[in-house]
Image (tube, rainbow, N blue to C red; front, side):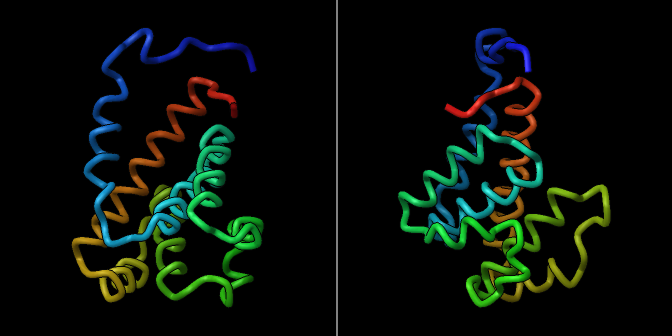
Length: 146
């Protein structure tokens, strides 16, 4: 991939709304590993190598087991390693990220509300939307892992 320009050098305030959303989402009932799981799974789907590199390192730093990271893209085949809440987060992450394919199923949404309540479910969805935005910026501007 050829070198692309750096967005904040062209539009200095471009990242501000995304950073503000991240700050808003910093205080949720989700633990750090669950937050990173959203970021990693979203980045796997979107093919954002930069974000995958950052967030797998962060997940490990927060105590995530490497084995879970190795199978995260195939979590349905390793449900014994992912709690019911983890599975609900991953299902919602996939459906929101791939929203143009089938939308978000009522069953998926209702399960999240049952497990997390309305406020945390809203925070989960906003976290997924935020990560999708970061991925799209990373991929569009050719951000490479460091």
